Image 1 (cartoon, rainbow, N blue to C red):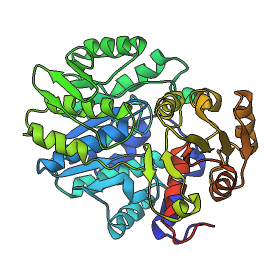
Image 2: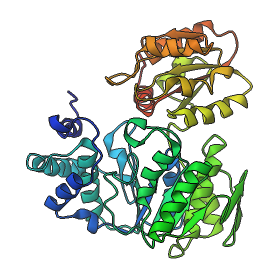
Image 3: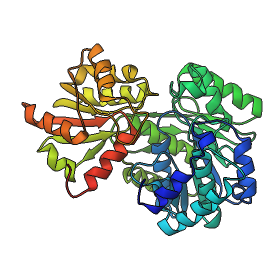
Image 4: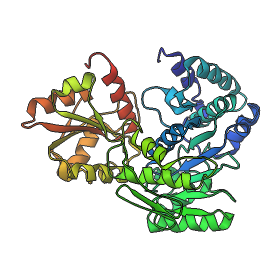
Length: 427
């Protein structure tokens, strides 16, 4: 067990009867009632759902709003290196002593009201947000929307839905339409909803839901438009350049601007938008790692990190790889619930080699052998590796040319990589 006191108490939140994900709201509402309904005492909420780009959208909004002088709370998941990343209070990760006190309090209530881990940690977040004033709370769903633990906020000031793709099929449904139906559950009566770029099947479901509950939609390709760095609506015309890598980040930044279009109560200038987007920092999203223990181990090769983990994430990564002018080697780890083949097929044409690793301390990780086997069926020159460090050593000893080494396939793997890269010496 971890010696970190926060991790020790977080481990205690895993109730044995509710160890797996169980999408319901009644349990969450009972727990919040015991805790005094903190979700009713939080700052105005922007509630975000979707399959891809949620975190990047919130990172853009946080950066822009803070550039304009507003105090911003933010809730995201999962974390990469430490749990405190999930709960941002007025622009800073929650302090260790503060969260430890809240975790202890919530943990003491779970005997009378069991909850899943995500329900308990979301309750912890609501307590933290209720105790510190801010101008806005950026709230990310964990999964789905309709029955997500965050969907207890009755009247957000805005909802937003990023691109929807097939993911978490065992919980959300097997089709785009079914998954969109779950994501649409955050749309509230009388609350405007910003819609990012969507497939037609998903868009139709979202539009039907909005019609049923009388919510106005602000849709990409309809009420607002963007091309490569150019945003147009009847409210503003602006050129911008994201700090984050990948063409898809233009979508995420443009969606953030669309959200601001629908929030006239926040006074934000075009200059603040441009500077905010240019100043976004969001780790493990096509992140170029330029210093640290693993960079030393990479021995002169470029080291990149990406946490995309579903077919759309693979498509985005493949599009980026297609633009590169170097040989590309991949170190890949994925969770068992992900469609590895559908992900890998998008990057397969661009790889010199793939080195499969199991994600450390994750029992639900693909084994290195199963992942390498999936890659081989796609014609990828694939190998098993005992660790990220071993894979790096193998690549650097065999690569004939200066190469790109991309570690990818999972946010859990990305968190592990950031942790070991920050250490003084990689094994």
